[in-house]
Length: 128
Image 1 (tube, rainbow, N blue to C red):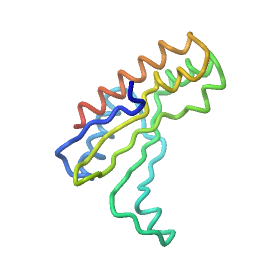
Image 2 (image 1 turned 135 degrees about the horizontal axis):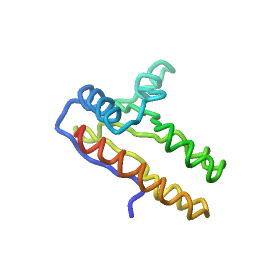
Image 3 (image 1 turned 135 degrees about the vertical axis):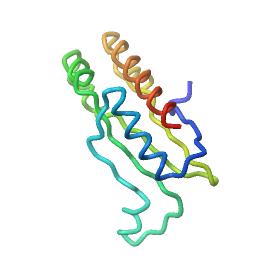
Image 4 (image 1 turned 180 degrees about the horizontal axis):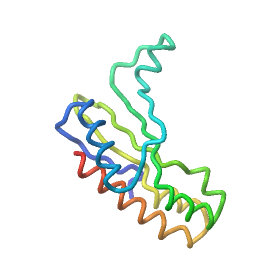
């Protein structure tokens, strides 16, 4: 399994980011933080051609559930979603929570990761 869930959209970069935020809200995920990495690199005097926006997102109930199962899962929180340009196309992607949780040896986290992954994939698919 590919660790990155990745879909291509025909939308512009800015429209994909805006639609993704709306779609995340519809599945009870909030955007805690976001960063346009290209702009940040430019601020630091480094040229980077393509847009890349990183969103850190969270569903508080799912986060609490995961943390109560095993506090170390906090190393994987909040979830990240990325919108980026590559070869003239706009992509939306996320590291699959089920793959990341597989790195922690706790079967009790599998259900949470699977539910979170399904919600985030749905948000991405609906934004595409």
